[in-house]
Length: 294
Length: 261
Image 1 (cartoon, rainbow over the protein chains, first blue to last red):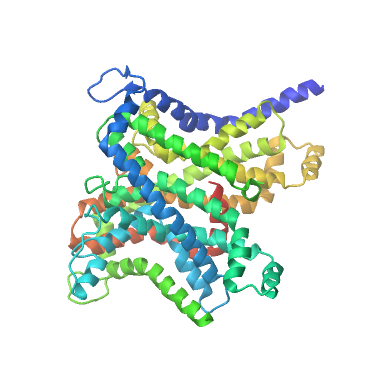
Image 2: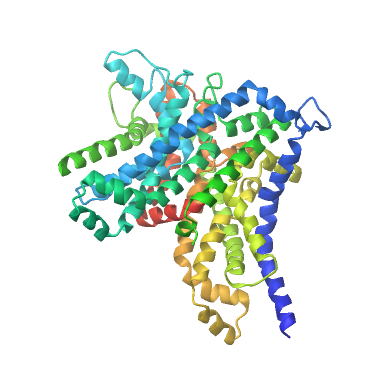
């Protein structure tokens, strides 16, 4: 009787999990495995049957200028977007975590970019940046400066995109900080105040350490975003000019759908996968799991 | 001091609002006139220049299809993880965790191969199928299910309810806020999805709004058309912004829960 119950429970549970597992295998687990394997083969339009070449794809890639450029850009992009949008999120949270006229309105303004699709954000900022008709250039012209082709110039393209991403993401981290700030016990701050701590000292020694889990967590999310979102490149720069704004995922996209170099697409995918796993490992070991998974 | 902080907050808020105000300004601007005069012409022109009605319909179908399948898959899986004992439970849970670690966008290369092998390139099935499960949803719902008193399940069992009846009559009604939070995240994420549908669709019958807009904008790549492109951009944003303004609190708390996505 008991034994048959156990069998039945197992069977039911597996039936319940089956739909999820089928899609998980099809679009997450198998692809990871197959990409790994493909990265050891030469496969492009000139190769009819994929040829096993061991680590050659990796060796070729290390010497590939465009890959190196995209990799370095991605690091700059991460450095440019992560600390800034997280810190800005903290600053915005502190600014709106008070009672003042226009509190709700300000929060709405800081948060709405989070709700808008990246594609729409890209068009909005394209309109800002574009030469001749763009808003920034109109202003520059008005005050007698020369025109700037911000997205068409290899010195400013990536930076322009970084600024846009910070604008889009800061509000997201703001709401996490806002919640965290509201959870800080008032008597802790009160105690620090009575001990004669200045506002800055209260922030540095009491508030900021208590916000640490939120900070870590925001950094993880922002870093993941820096590697997984390239919608803006498709709309704004196509990775250009001269790969100045190319990022790893966009490079995968180009190799898959434009250059049809599948071996390379697979190899770069493996690299990005390894970056994702490293980020997850950092989260696992560094972040306080209790706070978000409990 | 307080006044100074308020003023800097207003300046920042204005700065944040500026890009949006800019395209609203452009979208309503009559480009044929000197100076500024209000017009709806850009919206009408955009709507007529590209099949935006079709794109809207596609996006709505895609969003609803994904959410419906997700609700079924995550409910069953979350229940199994929350309330059942079975072989390899921990291991299976770890496997699901991988989907949170590796966002599907990173897997565009192998997944597009899978779609080609299945022979479903340029179909609505292809745009939706990778999102049929959500590890994030399973996580979220499992948490909620675990918090529901087990006595309720036992009482239902006594009355002779089957597992599915228990899920339907006990768990689902009590988890409504979680379903709402998950639904908002799923809908707004899919409404915004771009890279995957861009890769996997090749006809207006299957393109969602995001991809449709980018095709349309590419075709009208000149300054005189900016008003129309801005109007088209507003087509995509408008439903999301409206939903956000109506359900502000719910949106914010849902996005906070999406942190583990």
